[in-house]
Length: 213
View 1 (cartoon, helix red, strand yellow):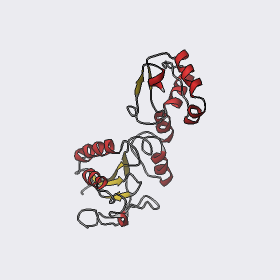
View 2: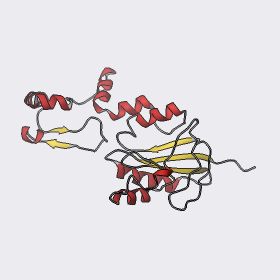
View 3: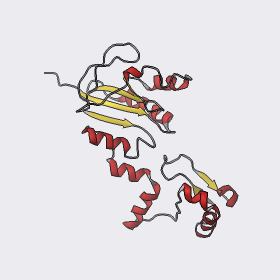
View 4: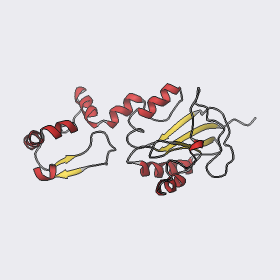
């Protein structure tokens, strides 16, 4: 008897500044998943948050580059999760042929940055009772928030380099106090980055108070 293939939903794109990185990652994964073992269901999320069924990364890239077409092309083919994550019998973007029905066995999220690596999409999968690849909600959230991650490391006595963390509102209200604290406690040069973006997003090297500001 022929063993039934595992239905794998590969999700990519998303409402993050790392959208393009996600498309590159997804293209590599889709090219290397063994189609003899897996029935692969590509699921693209546009920059605006619309879910599209059976669309490849190249199509998503082209769709995003066409002014005015991002949010209105094939919106009737958006994915709907119902009950046990049934993927409804919807046409594909390219050929109009149905991709079949039935629940996904597992989801492979290939979403970078916010709404993908921060526990939000993982929470959705947990609520829908869909198995998924990667870290759970708490691990994803802590790994994404560098301030909370460092606080956790400190609590269990792991070595962490000196750091200071501030919210935007604090910077807007008392910038001089923050500049002085960084100068006195960390010194220059120091590295500045967002606490909850991808590891290499928004990093800058401050050599003095002017560049720090």
